[in-house]
Picture (cartoon, rainbow, N blue to C red):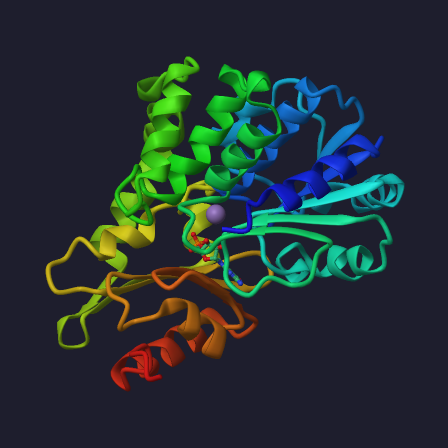
Length: 340
Ligand code: 5GP
Ligand code: MN
């Protein structure tokens, strides 16, 4: 892990000499993007930094809104000019839970490239772009795990329950409630420390994973009963959903979170996909249960995306029907199998 004293010192120096710090994360922010940015934001505020802002390329799911009390943040898809102004005034840009600027948005990427403010990366995806200070560890369960370790090194006396709640959010969402990507003891040790800080696991788990609107539960029921396709001979199952169907169930951001994992509950299924028609593109989510199906490579090679070996995503500008047809062909040709 590149968490040596020298890197911490360089980060600290940048923090201390900055008056306007902007934290950024990826498009479709998930629990880890949200938890790590909010956790670091709240820490930096405790550390004495006053001008802080988080920028997300688009909306975050409603069930994470409990973390944002008193947190200055901008959704750039709702206010691009404002976001650009804040970025321009920043004297430090901290990127979290993304490895490439292209993971922000088309509108932001180019603009971010042009900035001269120093950049810091805190992330756990492979092959990061160049940044001035890099904390990148692929083995980390989550960006929240890295953020916790960095905060501990900088000033552990500033950790508190609110920071803990944010960091716990990413720890448990990126590991599916501590069931994958957590083969080391680190994330359990950190969870234990956060509990000691006062984080209450049960209400947080209910807030993050369980609370669903009636229409979201009905959407899940519909997808499982009507839209699940299983190919036992190819160890694959997938679900596709059109924008029209999503509208029928009053779709809100985050309503499809976790749906792809249901496919993997079927005995023998090791490769799963969720294909959903969004505003102006088709979104694909992939999951694998085995390293012999590397969905990061699959998403990267065929679907303009990437992610991790066992969880990745991509997008397409084709129609939903075209995507489904192409995906089924790929399954039947076993293109998902990793050949090195
Ligand atoms: P999800 O399927 O939950 O949206 O994403 C699973 C994982 O894949 C996430 O950890 C995310 O980092 C990564 N991911 C999702 N979509 C993309 C994409 O379009 N490009 C890249 N590079 N990574 C993605
Ligand atoms: Mn993450």
